[in-house]
Length: 328
Image (cartoon, rainbow, N blue to C red; front, side, top):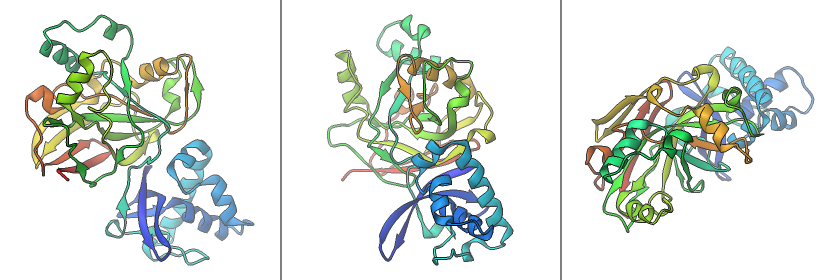
């Protein structure tokens, strides 16, 4: 399933809704579930839909397997009706939209936390070499991560504002996994069962600021926290094998800058989950980023973004995450 959060303008204002791609349209899963329940003559279909298929991504993830099963039933029912964009519910609500009728948001707009790892060995080594150092032995002993700003997520096709304090703005080509259920001290063997799905993540970085922060053995903070892009969707794990081996590409203004495969990762998401959950609870809706692959950022290439550039990150089976960087 390819899940999205989308914004739609109504007479009562702009609302964010949980949706799923189906062919060439986006189905409102909550209203589709209510329509499906009503067709089966279930009592109080709207109230049941609130329970089984909540209208927000985070609540949907928290419900878990029950929500996924109910959503699948709703998508099948909508498909059987013929033309989804002409369907309406009992209260006159729209069931599906054409892409040009809505705006995609970060698929998970309100994650509980954002942990971003440094999981690709060649990228980690390249960073150490730039500092004139050997990669620390600790890197091989545990997957290292920093905690990002979960409130600074940017959606697909949304502009990223260039921070006034940096002259070296960079992208990072990353795969993200979304935690699907609560767990603590999770073993690596069972960790894959805690993954809800995968998305594309762009960890925008102010490299000059990041360098200064990390020279003091803290951070990154202001070097990262201004914007992290996520999208265009979350693809559930039934569509992507574990560990994921997906082609990854970064383009700037249509030119390919970076290319690689997620299968080259040293620390798997299972290892990341096991490490992050040691004496600490992971919750549904937490995000884990892989960190960039080798050559997956301008820092590795000594090429830098410029105001007005459009960055496109594409990962096989997930899609294209596109953002334009602008100076306010």
